Length: 173
Image (cartoon, rainbow, N blue to C red):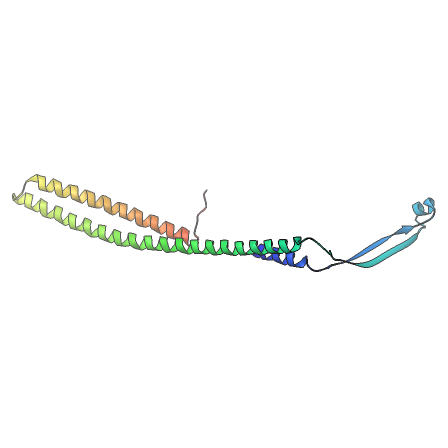
């Protein structure tokens, strides 16, 4: 954006006349041998110069308009980048929050199935139910613990995404 704004200033400056000061220093002599021996007369010249194009066929106006358009385009690109960054941060934080709620729910489910397995084992020991109910409770506990581990993984991945969205990074070694 700064560079595009500077180009607008350059395009506007082309409307103004340009000023320069030039100078020259040298030696003058009517004889070549005096010039080579260093006994020639020293001369110096210093003078201002002003130049302004009278007619450019609208090129300067078009150049300024193009520079202004590029500057506006740079501003829009910057705004888009900022809005995308804010959206990524909001999405990552929302995902992290939701993964926390899911993890808590899976932890409660695992605790409940662990208790169901304990009760099924006690009923089997008492001779009230068959071992099939114990096996079914074990299968349900395994599924609940697998879901709990996957939920924890999703929470950690959401944390990494939030970290990256907030500008964090890492270096590969």
